[in-house]
Image (cartoon, rainbow, N blue to C red; front, side, top):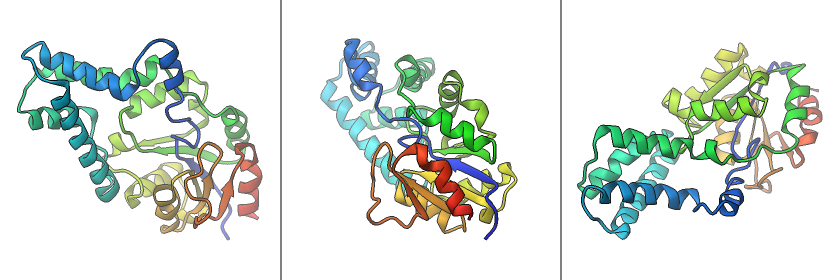
Length: 251
């Protein structure tokens, strides 16, 4: 078996705890992100002409369902601006281009204003692994785009540990599309046999790269999404155990 040359990580619920910002938003008297986004759109529309919040929410629900279908079946994540434009089309309403861009930026920056938390063991683990392997991140983006995720990583002192950052909004494809993993391996200068991917979702992070000849680790340290039926080469229940698990895969 080939020696491991590079390791890629999923981001959300692998290294970064999804929605860990919500308790802090509540403490600050802020609504949940989902509510805040819809309130902002409703307010912008009402500034031109009254519209019920119920109609806005119905259109948002429909576009969110379409986004999920396209993401899961076509492996594409629409940008925030694309989704806003679809909501407006569904409502048969229009906003000036500048206002659409401002709303999109508000959505995209929401997790920079009140930040989610990285798993507390992330830094020592990636620091240790970076001494032996090239590291990368492969992450789908929903509301927080690649440029904002780079800022989160940089401000947490983690960005420099990763030589490659692949985000779905920038590549135009999402996991488990083969192109995503091919691109990461190419940038890391490794073959499929020399790669390991670490993530929390069975289809996106395990079955996708495994079908291309990568080794895989299902991580359940933040959330267990199916370790009882996983096809992963290993399961990591405690992030601090990951370096030892990688050594076992290599051996």
